[in-house]
Length: 512
Image (cartoon, rainbow, N blue to C red; front, side):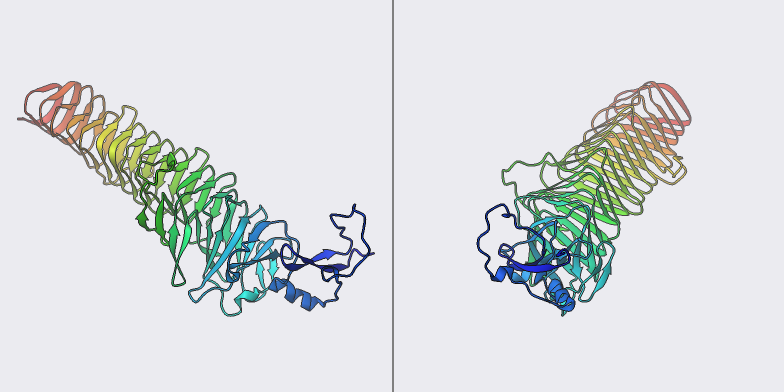
Protein backbone atom coordinates (compact mmCIF):
# COMPACT_ATOMS: atom_id res chain seq x y z
CA UNK A 1 0.00 0.00 0.00
CA UNK A 2 3.02 2.26 0.30
CA UNK A 3 4.29 1.75 -3.23
CA UNK A 4 3.26 5.28 -4.24
CA UNK A 5 4.74 6.89 -1.14
CA UNK A 6 8.23 8.36 -1.06
CA UNK A 7 10.45 9.87 1.57
CA UNK A 8 13.54 12.06 1.63
CA UNK A 9 16.77 10.56 2.94
CA UNK A 10 19.91 12.60 3.55
CA UNK A 11 22.79 10.85 1.79
CA UNK A 12 25.92 11.61 3.79
CA UNK A 13 28.22 10.47 0.97
CA UNK A 14 26.64 12.72 -1.63
CA UNK A 15 25.78 15.45 0.86
CA UNK A 16 22.24 15.87 -0.44
CA UNK A 17 18.64 14.78 -0.01
CA UNK A 18 17.54 11.82 -2.15
CA UNK A 19 14.12 10.45 -2.98
CA UNK A 20 13.52 6.78 -2.15
CA UNK A 21 10.42 4.63 -2.20
CA UNK A 22 8.75 4.08 1.16
CA UNK A 23 9.02 0.33 0.58
CA UNK A 24 12.78 0.45 -0.04
CA UNK A 25 14.66 -1.70 2.44
CA UNK A 26 17.96 -0.83 3.94
CA UNK A 27 21.00 -2.74 2.85
CA UNK A 28 21.31 -3.79 6.49
CA UNK A 29 17.79 -5.24 6.78
CA UNK A 30 19.11 -8.60 7.93
CA UNK A 31 20.76 -7.05 10.94
CA UNK A 32 18.67 -6.93 14.12
CA UNK A 33 16.85 -3.64 14.29
CA UNK A 34 17.60 -1.18 17.03
CA UNK A 35 14.78 0.66 18.74
CA UNK A 36 13.10 3.06 16.39
CA UNK A 37 14.46 6.57 16.58
CA UNK A 38 13.56 9.62 14.61
CA UNK A 39 16.53 11.39 13.04
CA UNK A 40 17.05 14.08 10.45
CA UNK A 41 17.99 11.52 7.86
CA UNK A 42 14.67 9.68 8.19
CA UNK A 43 12.24 12.52 8.75
CA UNK A 44 9.21 12.31 6.51
CA UNK A 45 8.15 15.58 4.96
CA UNK A 46 5.24 16.55 2.81
CA UNK A 47 6.15 18.61 -0.23
CA UNK A 48 4.06 19.96 -3.06
CA UNK A 49 4.75 18.91 -6.67
CA UNK A 50 5.90 22.46 -7.44
CA UNK A 51 8.39 22.50 -4.57
CA UNK A 52 9.66 19.06 -5.52
CA UNK A 53 10.22 20.19 -9.13
CA UNK A 54 12.16 23.24 -7.97
CA UNK A 55 14.30 21.16 -5.61
CA UNK A 56 14.97 18.66 -8.40
CA UNK A 57 16.05 21.36 -10.86
CA UNK A 58 18.32 23.02 -8.32
CA UNK A 59 20.02 19.76 -7.43
CA UNK A 60 18.82 19.78 -3.82
CA UNK A 61 17.06 16.50 -4.56
CA UNK A 62 18.48 13.85 -6.88
CA UNK A 63 16.67 10.96 -8.46
CA UNK A 64 18.71 7.73 -8.53
CA UNK A 65 20.98 7.67 -11.59
CA UNK A 66 22.80 4.58 -12.84
CA UNK A 67 25.23 6.57 -15.00
CA UNK A 68 28.86 6.82 -14.04
CA UNK A 69 29.06 10.59 -14.05
CA UNK A 70 30.38 12.08 -10.82
CA UNK A 71 31.32 15.69 -10.12
CA UNK A 72 34.77 16.16 -8.60
CA UNK A 73 34.14 17.06 -4.97
CA UNK A 74 37.69 18.42 -4.65
CA UNK A 75 37.10 21.03 -7.38
CA UNK A 76 35.93 24.55 -6.54
CA UNK A 77 32.19 24.66 -5.97
CA UNK A 78 31.75 26.90 -9.00
CA UNK A 79 33.21 24.12 -11.17
CA UNK A 80 31.13 21.23 -9.84
CA UNK A 81 28.19 20.37 -12.11
CA UNK A 82 24.97 18.96 -10.70
CA UNK A 83 24.23 15.42 -11.91
CA UNK A 84 20.68 14.09 -11.82
CA UNK A 85 18.25 12.18 -14.03
CA UNK A 86 15.84 13.30 -16.71
CA UNK A 87 12.21 12.19 -16.61
CA UNK A 88 13.09 9.14 -18.72
CA UNK A 89 16.11 8.25 -16.60
CA UNK A 90 18.99 9.65 -18.65
CA UNK A 91 21.86 11.38 -16.89
CA UNK A 92 21.28 15.12 -16.85
CA UNK A 93 24.22 17.39 -16.12
CA UNK A 94 23.31 20.88 -15.00
CA UNK A 95 26.47 22.66 -16.10
CA UNK A 96 27.96 25.38 -13.96
CA UNK A 97 27.50 29.12 -14.47
CA UNK A 98 29.59 30.34 -17.43
CA UNK A 99 32.09 33.15 -16.93
CA UNK A 100 32.09 36.47 -18.76
CA UNK A 101 33.67 34.75 -21.78
CA UNK A 102 30.84 32.24 -21.99
CA UNK A 103 32.95 29.31 -20.72
CA UNK A 104 31.23 26.88 -18.33
CA UNK A 105 33.92 24.92 -16.50
CA UNK A 106 32.87 21.53 -15.09
CA UNK A 107 35.14 19.06 -13.32
CA UNK A 108 34.45 15.36 -12.77
CA UNK A 109 36.07 12.47 -10.97
CA UNK A 110 34.34 10.20 -13.50
CA UNK A 111 32.67 10.89 -16.81
CA UNK A 112 31.37 7.74 -18.51
CA UNK A 113 28.37 7.74 -20.84
CA UNK A 114 26.43 4.55 -21.56
CA UNK A 115 24.58 3.72 -24.77
CA UNK A 116 21.50 5.68 -23.70
CA UNK A 117 23.44 8.95 -23.80
CA UNK A 118 23.54 11.98 -21.53
CA UNK A 119 22.29 15.57 -21.42
CA UNK A 120 24.39 18.69 -20.88
CA UNK A 121 21.78 21.18 -19.69
CA UNK A 122 22.54 24.58 -21.23
CA UNK A 123 19.03 26.00 -20.94
CA UNK A 124 17.70 28.64 -18.54
CA UNK A 125 14.16 27.48 -19.21
CA UNK A 126 12.36 24.18 -19.62
CA UNK A 127 13.22 22.72 -23.01
CA UNK A 128 12.72 19.63 -25.14
CA UNK A 129 15.58 17.29 -26.06
CA UNK A 130 15.90 14.41 -28.49
CA UNK A 131 17.31 11.98 -25.94
CA UNK A 132 15.84 13.02 -22.62
CA UNK A 133 12.45 14.47 -23.47
CA UNK A 134 11.54 17.60 -21.51
CA UNK A 135 14.35 18.95 -19.34
CA UNK A 136 13.83 21.41 -16.50
CA UNK A 137 15.64 24.74 -16.55
CA UNK A 138 19.21 24.80 -15.26
CA UNK A 139 19.22 27.07 -12.17
CA UNK A 140 22.94 27.83 -12.66
CA UNK A 141 22.13 29.67 -15.91
CA UNK A 142 19.94 32.49 -14.65
CA UNK A 143 22.14 35.15 -16.27
CA UNK A 144 23.41 33.55 -19.48
CA UNK A 145 23.91 30.27 -21.27
CA UNK A 146 27.32 28.90 -22.17
CA UNK A 147 29.01 29.14 -25.54
CA UNK A 148 31.72 26.65 -24.47
CA UNK A 149 31.01 23.70 -22.16
CA UNK A 150 34.35 22.50 -20.80
CA UNK A 151 34.24 19.05 -19.16
CA UNK A 152 37.47 18.17 -17.35
CA UNK A 153 37.98 14.67 -15.96
CA UNK A 154 40.38 14.18 -13.05
CA UNK A 155 40.83 10.42 -12.95
CA UNK A 156 43.37 7.67 -13.44
CA UNK A 157 40.92 5.91 -15.75
CA UNK A 158 40.00 6.74 -19.34
CA UNK A 159 36.50 8.04 -20.01
CA UNK A 160 34.17 5.55 -21.69
CA UNK A 161 31.89 7.37 -24.11
CA UNK A 162 29.42 4.78 -25.40
CA UNK A 163 26.52 7.05 -26.29
CA UNK A 164 25.60 10.50 -27.56
CA UNK A 165 25.94 13.67 -25.52
CA UNK A 166 23.18 16.18 -26.23
CA UNK A 167 23.28 19.87 -25.40
CA UNK A 168 19.89 20.98 -24.12
CA UNK A 169 19.01 24.57 -24.94
CA UNK A 170 21.47 26.88 -26.65
CA UNK A 171 23.91 25.24 -29.06
CA UNK A 172 27.46 25.29 -27.71
CA UNK A 173 30.97 23.97 -28.25
CA UNK A 174 31.70 20.90 -26.11
CA UNK A 175 35.09 19.77 -24.81
CA UNK A 176 35.78 16.41 -23.14
CA UNK A 177 39.28 16.51 -21.62
CA UNK A 178 40.74 13.50 -19.81
CA UNK A 179 44.55 13.19 -19.60
CA UNK A 180 44.16 9.47 -18.84
CA UNK A 181 42.51 8.85 -22.20
CA UNK A 182 39.13 8.51 -23.89
CA UNK A 183 37.47 5.52 -25.52
CA UNK A 184 34.62 6.24 -27.93
CA UNK A 185 32.28 3.38 -28.86
CA UNK A 186 29.13 4.81 -30.40
CA UNK A 187 29.72 8.32 -29.12
CA UNK A 188 28.72 11.59 -30.72
CA UNK A 189 27.19 14.97 -30.05
CA UNK A 190 23.79 16.54 -30.65
CA UNK A 191 23.13 20.30 -30.80
CA UNK A 192 26.84 21.03 -30.40
CA UNK A 193 28.73 23.33 -32.74
CA UNK A 194 32.43 22.60 -32.24
CA UNK A 195 33.52 19.50 -30.37
CA UNK A 196 36.83 18.37 -28.93
CA UNK A 197 38.05 15.08 -27.52
CA UNK A 198 41.45 15.55 -25.91
CA UNK A 199 43.91 14.08 -23.45
CA UNK A 200 45.27 17.53 -22.78
CA UNK A 201 44.87 19.84 -19.81
CA UNK A 202 42.75 22.88 -20.59
CA UNK A 203 44.67 26.17 -20.88
CA UNK A 204 42.58 29.04 -19.50
CA UNK A 205 43.69 32.64 -19.93
CA UNK A 206 41.59 35.58 -18.75
CA UNK A 207 38.57 33.32 -18.68
CA UNK A 208 39.04 32.15 -22.27
CA UNK A 209 39.81 28.61 -23.35
CA UNK A 210 43.07 29.13 -25.22
CA UNK A 211 44.07 25.55 -25.92
CA UNK A 212 45.32 22.27 -24.49
CA UNK A 213 48.56 21.00 -22.96
CA UNK A 214 49.13 17.38 -24.01
CA UNK A 215 51.70 15.29 -22.14
CA UNK A 216 50.38 11.83 -23.01
CA UNK A 217 47.21 9.81 -23.32
CA UNK A 218 45.48 7.92 -26.08
CA UNK A 219 42.08 8.25 -27.70
CA UNK A 220 40.52 5.03 -29.01
CA UNK A 221 37.70 4.93 -31.54
CA UNK A 222 36.21 1.46 -31.60
CA UNK A 223 33.02 -0.59 -31.95
CA UNK A 224 30.24 1.72 -33.12
CA UNK A 225 32.65 4.57 -33.77
CA UNK A 226 32.23 8.34 -33.55
CA UNK A 227 29.43 10.21 -35.31
CA UNK A 228 29.81 13.97 -35.06
CA UNK A 229 28.29 14.92 -38.39
CA UNK A 230 25.82 17.24 -36.63
CA UNK A 231 28.67 19.57 -35.58
CA UNK A 232 30.43 22.11 -37.77
CA UNK A 233 33.89 21.13 -36.57
CA UNK A 234 35.43 18.15 -34.78
CA UNK A 235 38.91 17.88 -33.32
CA UNK A 236 40.78 15.03 -31.66
CA UNK A 237 43.90 16.05 -29.75
CA UNK A 238 46.06 13.45 -27.97
CA UNK A 239 49.52 11.96 -27.91
CA UNK A 240 48.19 9.07 -29.99
CA UNK A 241 44.92 8.06 -31.65
CA UNK A 242 43.78 4.54 -32.60
CA UNK A 243 40.88 4.21 -35.03
CA UNK A 244 39.28 0.76 -35.14
CA UNK A 245 35.86 1.98 -36.26
CA UNK A 246 34.38 4.74 -38.38
CA UNK A 247 34.61 8.45 -37.64
CA UNK A 248 32.09 10.74 -39.33
CA UNK A 249 32.37 14.52 -39.20
CA UNK A 250 31.92 17.62 -41.33
CA UNK A 251 35.40 19.05 -40.80
CA UNK A 252 37.86 16.86 -38.91
CA UNK A 253 41.17 17.89 -37.39
CA UNK A 254 43.44 15.40 -35.60
CA UNK A 255 46.60 16.51 -33.78
CA UNK A 256 48.93 13.96 -32.18
CA UNK A 257 52.09 14.24 -30.12
CA UNK A 258 53.18 15.98 -26.94
CA UNK A 259 52.24 19.56 -27.71
CA UNK A 260 50.54 22.70 -26.66
CA UNK A 261 47.71 23.13 -29.12
CA UNK A 262 45.50 26.18 -29.62
CA UNK A 263 41.74 25.76 -29.72
CA UNK A 264 41.91 26.18 -33.52
CA UNK A 265 44.15 23.05 -33.62
CA UNK A 266 47.27 25.06 -34.40
CA UNK A 267 50.31 23.57 -32.67
CA UNK A 268 51.92 26.40 -30.69
CA UNK A 269 54.65 24.38 -28.93
CA UNK A 270 56.16 20.97 -29.67
CA UNK A 271 57.57 19.49 -26.47
CA UNK A 272 61.04 17.98 -26.29
CA UNK A 273 61.43 14.23 -25.85
CA UNK A 274 61.05 13.44 -22.14
CA UNK A 275 62.61 9.98 -22.43
CA UNK A 276 59.32 8.19 -21.83
CA UNK A 277 58.17 5.34 -24.06
CA UNK A 278 56.67 6.71 -27.25
CA UNK A 279 53.84 5.10 -29.19
CA UNK A 280 54.85 3.32 -32.39
CA UNK A 281 52.20 5.18 -34.35
CA UNK A 282 50.73 8.58 -33.58
CA UNK A 283 47.69 7.69 -35.68
CA UNK A 284 46.81 4.06 -36.33
CA UNK A 285 43.78 3.36 -38.54
CA UNK A 286 42.88 -0.33 -38.76
CA UNK A 287 41.38 -2.04 -41.80
CA UNK A 288 37.93 -1.85 -40.19
CA UNK A 289 38.44 1.81 -39.33
CA UNK A 290 38.04 4.97 -41.31
CA UNK A 291 37.64 8.73 -41.19
CA UNK A 292 35.06 10.47 -43.33
CA UNK A 293 34.52 14.22 -43.52
CA UNK A 294 34.23 17.06 -45.99
CA UNK A 295 37.76 18.13 -45.02
CA UNK A 296 40.40 16.24 -43.02
CA UNK A 297 43.61 17.59 -41.49
CA UNK A 298 46.00 15.24 -39.66
CA UNK A 299 49.12 16.53 -37.88
CA UNK A 300 51.66 14.38 -36.02
CA UNK A 301 54.53 16.22 -34.32
CA UNK A 302 56.32 13.62 -32.19
CA UNK A 303 59.76 12.95 -33.62
CA UNK A 304 60.06 9.56 -35.29
CA UNK A 305 56.47 8.54 -34.54
CA UNK A 306 54.53 7.62 -37.64
CA UNK A 307 51.08 7.15 -39.12
CA UNK A 308 49.65 3.82 -40.28
CA UNK A 309 46.48 3.55 -42.33
CA UNK A 310 44.96 0.23 -43.30
CA UNK A 311 41.44 1.65 -43.51
CA UNK A 312 40.04 4.62 -45.37
CA UNK A 313 40.47 8.34 -44.94
CA UNK A 314 38.03 10.15 -47.18
CA UNK A 315 37.47 13.88 -47.63
CA UNK A 316 34.29 13.87 -49.67
CA UNK A 317 34.09 17.58 -50.49
CA UNK A 318 37.38 19.20 -49.53
CA UNK A 319 41.04 18.67 -48.84
CA UNK A 320 43.01 16.00 -47.03
CA UNK A 321 46.22 17.18 -45.36
CA UNK A 322 48.53 14.83 -43.47
CA UNK A 323 51.75 16.01 -41.84
CA UNK A 324 53.84 13.61 -39.75
CA UNK A 325 57.29 13.81 -38.20
CA UNK A 326 57.87 10.06 -38.57
CA UNK A 327 57.00 7.64 -41.34
CA UNK A 328 53.76 6.96 -43.19
CA UNK A 329 52.46 3.49 -43.99
CA UNK A 330 49.38 3.25 -46.19
CA UNK A 331 47.85 -0.06 -47.20
CA UNK A 332 44.33 1.35 -47.29
CA UNK A 333 42.83 4.32 -49.12
CA UNK A 334 43.53 8.03 -48.84
CA UNK A 335 41.21 10.05 -51.03
CA UNK A 336 39.88 13.58 -51.37
CA UNK A 337 37.71 15.64 -53.63
CA UNK A 338 40.09 18.61 -53.44
CA UNK A 339 43.86 18.77 -52.90
CA UNK A 340 45.57 15.87 -51.12
CA UNK A 341 48.87 16.67 -49.41
CA UNK A 342 51.10 14.30 -47.43
CA UNK A 343 54.38 15.42 -45.89
CA UNK A 344 56.66 13.30 -43.69
CA UNK A 345 60.14 13.70 -42.29
CA UNK A 346 60.49 9.92 -42.43
CA UNK A 347 59.79 7.34 -45.13
CA UNK A 348 56.51 6.89 -46.95
CA UNK A 349 55.31 3.45 -48.02
CA UNK A 350 52.17 3.29 -50.15
CA UNK A 351 50.79 -0.16 -50.89
CA UNK A 352 47.22 1.08 -51.19
CA UNK A 353 45.46 3.90 -53.02
CA UNK A 354 46.13 7.63 -52.87
CA UNK A 355 43.53 9.40 -54.99
CA UNK A 356 42.41 13.00 -55.46
CA UNK A 357 40.11 14.65 -57.95
CA UNK A 358 42.54 17.58 -57.93
CA UNK A 359 46.25 17.75 -57.00
CA UNK A 360 48.25 15.10 -55.13
CA UNK A 361 51.46 16.20 -53.41
CA UNK A 362 53.65 13.65 -51.61
CA UNK A 363 56.81 14.85 -49.87
CA UNK A 364 59.17 12.58 -47.92
CA UNK A 365 62.41 13.42 -46.14
CA UNK A 366 63.44 9.78 -46.55
CA UNK A 367 62.48 7.12 -49.07
CA UNK A 368 59.13 7.23 -50.83
CA UNK A 369 58.10 3.71 -51.84
CA UNK A 370 55.05 3.07 -53.97
CA UNK A 371 53.69 -0.30 -55.00
CA UNK A 372 50.09 0.90 -55.17
CA UNK A 373 48.15 3.65 -56.93
CA UNK A 374 48.75 7.38 -56.87
CA UNK A 375 46.16 9.16 -59.02
CA UNK A 376 45.42 12.87 -59.44
CA UNK A 377 42.68 14.63 -61.33
CA UNK A 378 45.20 17.38 -62.01
CA UNK A 379 48.88 17.33 -61.07
CA UNK A 380 50.71 14.62 -59.12
CA UNK A 381 53.98 15.72 -57.50
CA UNK A 382 56.24 13.25 -55.67
CA UNK A 383 59.42 14.49 -53.97
CA UNK A 384 61.75 12.46 -51.75
CA UNK A 385 65.30 11.71 -50.71
CA UNK A 386 64.92 8.49 -52.69
CA UNK A 387 61.91 7.58 -54.84
CA UNK A 388 61.01 3.97 -55.63
CA UNK A 389 57.86 3.07 -57.57
CA UNK A 390 57.73 -0.66 -58.31
CA UNK A 391 56.65 -2.62 -61.37
CA UNK A 392 53.21 -3.16 -59.80
CA UNK A 393 52.65 0.55 -59.25
CA UNK A 394 50.69 3.22 -61.10
CA UNK A 395 51.42 6.94 -61.10
CA UNK A 396 48.84 8.98 -63.00
CA UNK A 397 47.94 12.65 -63.51
CA UNK A 398 44.98 14.18 -65.33
CA UNK A 399 42.61 11.31 -64.50
CA UNK A 400 38.86 11.95 -64.58
CA UNK A 401 36.18 10.29 -62.47
CA UNK A 402 35.96 7.41 -64.93
CA UNK A 403 39.67 6.64 -64.73
CA UNK A 404 40.48 8.14 -68.14
CA UNK A 405 43.38 10.50 -68.92
CA UNK A 406 41.14 13.28 -70.19
CA UNK A 407 42.02 16.27 -67.98
CA UNK A 408 45.04 18.60 -67.94
CA UNK A 409 47.62 17.22 -65.55
CA UNK A 410 51.36 16.76 -65.05
CA UNK A 411 53.30 13.99 -63.30
CA UNK A 412 56.32 15.48 -61.56
CA UNK A 413 58.87 13.13 -59.94
CA UNK A 414 61.87 14.52 -58.08
CA UNK A 415 64.44 12.57 -56.06
CA UNK A 416 67.61 13.83 -54.41
CA UNK A 417 69.00 10.33 -54.81
CA UNK A 418 68.01 7.52 -57.14
CA UNK A 419 64.63 7.63 -58.85
CA UNK A 420 62.95 4.37 -59.83
CA UNK A 421 59.57 4.41 -61.57
CA UNK A 422 59.20 0.95 -63.10
CA UNK A 423 55.42 0.61 -63.27
CA UNK A 424 52.84 2.60 -65.20
CA UNK A 425 53.68 6.31 -65.41
CA UNK A 426 50.86 8.21 -67.10
CA UNK A 427 49.97 11.87 -67.61
CA UNK A 428 47.69 13.84 -69.89
CA UNK A 429 50.30 16.58 -70.40
CA UNK A 430 53.84 16.22 -69.04
CA UNK A 431 55.98 13.72 -67.19
CA UNK A 432 59.15 15.09 -65.61
CA UNK A 433 61.46 12.70 -63.76
CA UNK A 434 64.67 13.94 -62.13
CA UNK A 435 67.15 12.15 -59.85
CA UNK A 436 70.83 11.42 -59.32
CA UNK A 437 70.07 8.27 -61.33
CA UNK A 438 66.82 7.59 -63.20
CA UNK A 439 65.58 4.03 -63.68
CA UNK A 440 62.40 3.46 -65.71
CA UNK A 441 63.32 -0.11 -66.67
CA UNK A 442 60.30 -2.20 -67.65
CA UNK A 443 57.91 0.71 -67.27
CA UNK A 444 55.06 1.89 -69.44
CA UNK A 445 55.49 5.64 -69.58
CA UNK A 446 53.16 7.81 -71.63
CA UNK A 447 52.41 11.55 -71.83
CA UNK A 448 52.27 14.35 -74.34
CA UNK A 449 55.76 15.44 -73.28
CA UNK A 450 58.32 13.37 -71.36
CA UNK A 451 61.53 14.74 -69.83
CA UNK A 452 64.06 12.52 -68.01
CA UNK A 453 67.09 14.01 -66.22
CA UNK A 454 69.86 12.32 -64.22
CA UNK A 455 72.28 14.56 -62.35
CA UNK A 456 75.05 12.10 -61.42
CA UNK A 457 74.63 8.71 -63.10
CA UNK A 458 72.91 6.92 -65.96
CA UNK A 459 69.33 6.69 -67.20
CA UNK A 460 67.85 3.25 -67.80
CA UNK A 461 64.80 2.62 -69.97
CA UNK A 462 65.76 -1.02 -70.44
CA UNK A 463 62.72 -3.09 -71.46
CA UNK A 464 60.48 -0.03 -71.12
CA UNK A 465 58.02 1.58 -73.50
CA UNK A 466 58.07 5.38 -73.60
CA UNK A 467 55.58 7.21 -75.82
CA UNK A 468 55.01 10.93 -76.22
CA UNK A 469 54.76 13.74 -78.70
CA UNK A 470 58.12 14.97 -77.43
CA UNK A 471 60.74 12.98 -75.51
CA UNK A 472 63.81 14.55 -73.94
CA UNK A 473 66.53 12.55 -72.17
CA UNK A 474 69.50 14.13 -70.39
CA UNK A 475 71.87 11.62 -68.78
CA UNK A 476 74.87 12.59 -66.66
CA UNK A 477 76.62 9.46 -67.94
CA UNK A 478 74.93 6.88 -70.18
CA UNK A 479 71.51 5.98 -71.58
CA UNK A 480 70.65 2.27 -71.61
CA UNK A 481 67.58 1.38 -73.67
CA UNK A 482 68.29 -2.33 -74.21
CA UNK A 483 65.06 -4.12 -75.17
CA UNK A 484 63.24 -0.82 -74.74
CA UNK A 485 61.13 1.25 -77.12
CA UNK A 486 61.25 5.02 -77.47
CA UNK A 487 58.40 6.49 -79.51
CA UNK A 488 58.03 10.24 -80.05
CA UNK A 489 57.38 12.86 -82.68
CA UNK A 490 60.51 14.62 -81.48
CA UNK A 491 63.32 12.85 -79.59
CA UNK A 492 66.29 14.63 -78.01
CA UNK A 493 69.00 12.62 -76.21
CA UNK A 494 72.00 13.98 -74.34
CA UNK A 495 74.48 11.55 -72.75
CA UNK A 496 78.06 12.16 -71.62
CA UNK A 497 79.36 8.64 -72.32
CA UNK A 498 77.23 6.21 -74.33
CA UNK A 499 73.78 5.68 -75.79
CA UNK A 500 72.32 2.22 -76.34
CA UNK A 501 68.98 2.17 -78.17
CA UNK A 502 67.05 -0.98 -79.10
CA UNK A 503 64.01 0.48 -80.87
CA UNK A 504 63.51 4.14 -81.69
CA UNK A 505 60.57 5.55 -83.58
CA UNK A 506 60.75 9.32 -84.08
CA UNK A 507 60.23 11.73 -86.95
CA UNK A 508 63.10 13.84 -85.59
CA UNK A 509 65.96 12.54 -83.45
CA UNK A 510 68.80 14.59 -81.96
CA UNK A 511 71.73 12.94 -80.13
CA UNK A 512 74.45 14.79 -78.26
